[in-house]
Image 1 (tube, helix red, strand yellow):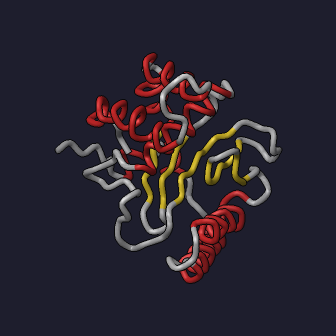
Image 2 (cartoon, rainbow, N blue to C red):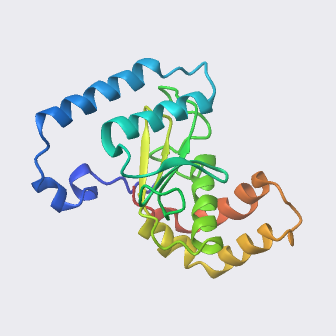
Length: 202
């Protein structure tokens, strides 16, 4: 089993370590996080909890500096600017919140699950279909667990995979035997991820 889980200091840009957050921002973050966790409800659908996540980002981190909403089939995105037509910078796949792994959430020792396969599809839509080179991160979360991926990994392992890009385009244009997203996840994304699973850092 190969696990590429980075420790926080490895994953965080060293420039951020020099920034000292002020007490007011820390308290606001804690208050908003506490509110989100208190309202989070595994009996509610993904949409309910996704809205809590969006509110958390707006109130504790981004305010009105970045546009946060859904885009096409992506659960949630953070744009690179406050305008709705600006490029997407962060793509989220949100799952129903549970304190234990659902079958669709990645696990530290098993990334190749539906949530990660969905991120591959959303990334290819942004990168191939929309020509967006400004995606910075991709995230799978159920509010309790967070799998954060640098978009450079997706660029290197998935966008550079010419066969995967061709399969994605053929799928999008209806030239394959299956047309459902489940077909894409199982027949296209899953094997492509399996080929490079040992190189995916998170």
